[in-house]
Image (tube, rainbow, N blue to C red):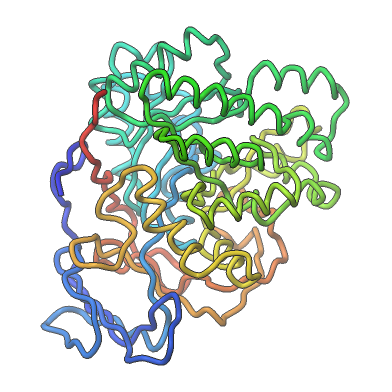
Length: 457
């Protein structure tokens, strides 16, 4: 498989033999599963295998899945390390079963030139415990160097609506130029889709809003109109489009219809849009404040249906940590976002436990389909030739979520007190045990993700 970019060749890894695992999704009683990793790559998967000198990891009947791919995180580093940083953020990723992340820099220094992107990749490589991709920022200032940045980034990130740290773009001609340039550079646009004009109108309509009105301030209509705009520009320019953190039933319907008529478009959502709703605002207050807003239970059901039929390809956390004292400010001054990379597999597995998603769909949404949604080869599958990223967990072990015990610097969780299953017990990154017994076993070692070549149009 041809790959280019910051990682032109496979970076290697360890040798490992996993013995006595259970497969997932669970099937009828069968022989234990074995898996062999050589130099960081899976070379053999089957039953009745034997080690050939590799270190042996005894699964002892625990369930084996691929390492998770979180397609959307904010680690605020460089620039705002006080809020998280790659060392804490990647430790949290391992805690949640995540071995690969795609990170959005929405605080200065932004990646609007090849030099800035290269500096960011070098900064992250020295700190990350997991493999990573760094999204370049799609702004007018980026236009002169999009072609040069394209080989180094999975996609270009565009904010159509403003959110924490970034203003939204609403001028149609500016957006048209950005879409055309991304298409020419051959990289997908990943978009925060909320209409800036309607966001301003929502603030004007609800001047004394609280967290209970956040879904009205940042409305269904704002997301739907923005997705309409992005789809039209995608069709006009030929640029591939991915809608990040889709939150509304109408948004899902628009993506589904566009895909049906051949538009190159995909989407991902986040755990909080599936497991929480605006009805949780009286209990959670500003902890529920995220952008786009968390909407109704009916919207959550539409998102689950979108995952089931493939319209929504992935579940990414949009991990956005903020200190609790900032979240406890008055609603208008509290930052939007919540931490959850450290809970990605338990939260996704909860959708299976509740009967909302099949085991196959839930697993794919954070592994194989997640990787495919951003064209990331070599990740998310337990087959020969793919990276030896593995998770072992006990599906029957229950734990209570305590924010103060999670790796994120924020030390709070919107899921405080929830009893969840599926907490990873061992996490392997390219054949190296990176997490075990509740602690990271590596300090760094993450590498840039392999990327498919740009596809200029």
